[in-house]
Image (spheres, rainbow, N blue to C red):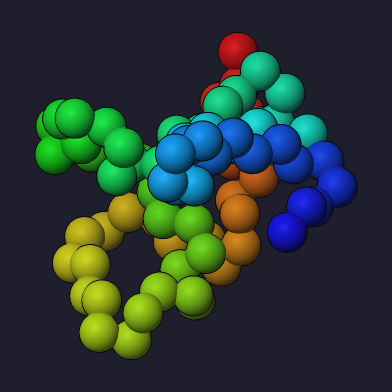
Length: 79
């Protein structure tokens, strides 16, 4: 599905998502955490789309939870 203002790159062999760029966050690229070798060494700063979490997924932390993309927060972190 193509969304205006969003570019996505997928693996040419298996189709897995590899990278995304969102027009409203210039200068930032997003890599799915599952494609990183040492993802367990990265800690989140916040949770986006918290209302869309699977009902059996319980994350026990005190990080801020945003019900949408948290684009305003992410814009402030852009270079």
